[in-house]
Image 1 (cartoon, rainbow, N blue to C red):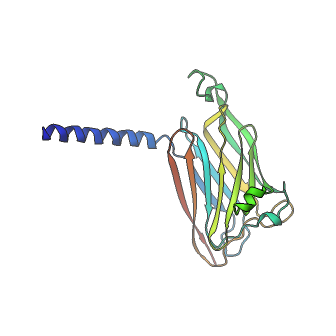
Image 2: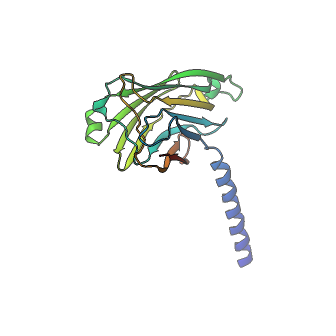
Image 3: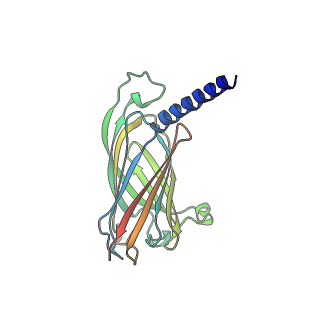
Length: 223
């Protein structure tokens, strides 16, 4: 009896392990951060590249973490609607992206523009300690309000929900360039004043399950 129970338990553990591995492979967004200038106190552009493979679970929430030492301006320093950056996405579009459509429904890649602008905070966001709001608009795909919290000492988080869109789906490749200065000439990102490694982080949550993906990337700030 003990032997039978041991075999049964072993089979169950093996099965669960296989399910976990298969499930984990369905949500693997890949992201990279690049600074155009990595010297201390520089005012660089920041390039963000994000991609997902075909048939992956879609994104529901994003949290980007910029480490301590960097400086990002608060809401009062940048006017509502001021330009912060731009980019584009190449993503599958069409009825084939809708989960309720037949499996052979049409879909095809489309290239669509993106803009990043400053958005005034609501009273509720001010009360919640939100420092600024960055509005990301990807034409025909999604609008995401990234709430910026934190400070130079603790680092910053850019946090936002990603609304579902049944007309678009992975695979996609998204490139965003956060300008060095806003349209009105306000520096957007200022590097730390001390050289050394800095860890950027991105956390994504799935729309379709409890899956979470976390990526860390070290960028070395130079003297």
